[in-house]
Image (cartoon, rainbow, N blue to C red; front, side, top):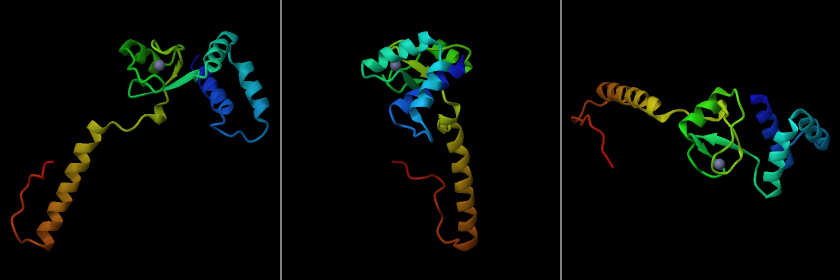
Length: 140
Ligand SMILES: [Zn+2]
């Protein structure tokens, strides 16, 4: 079922001219429309008719179209990808793109900081052992 949403997003990108298709765009749109179940297309078309996107990408557990946070149950369902999920608030189809999710900052930052300060400390000791440096970094 997840594939349907990917196809729907592709369709939306083509129809909105966000992605360019090498070849006959109209044919590709028709091909995608034939692949997607009619009831899904129907809902999508109703959204598009209102000038809204039919598909919304989810980032940080938030619907990027209406900016509302998703309930954790809905988000979990979305990540599992075994069913089509619709935003509770705006009614758009939701899509979760794993490759689109930014790196989790909380896990990365301490490691980078530790490596940085360590190499800085080393070079400081080797090259200029002048004044005592405070180990703590300036805050603010
Ligand atoms: Zn929404």
